[in-house]
Amino acid sequence: ASSSSAELMTLRVIDEDGAEVYFTLKPTTPLKKLMHVYCNRKGVPLSNMRFLLDGQRIDEAKTPGEMGMEDGEVIVAEI
Image (cartoon, rainbow, N blue to C red; front, side, top):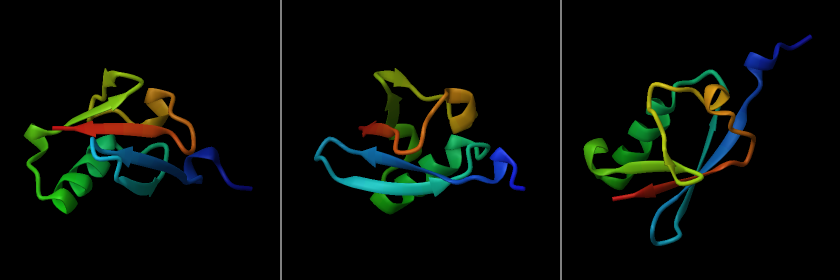
């Protein structure tokens, strides 16, 4: 029997150019991990990026579970 915390979910991060990056993580993983990896790939400082879910800025200390995110959720990244 697997607990729900062991399940993985996929989140899509889309930038202003429409480029998508997919992340697979646990619902209990702090979103700052995703944000840091994304910024490293883009070569942009985290302080320059905003990550939005349904138009609301994402708190990097929160987890997808705390944010009520579902598998396949789209996060918008803007500079």
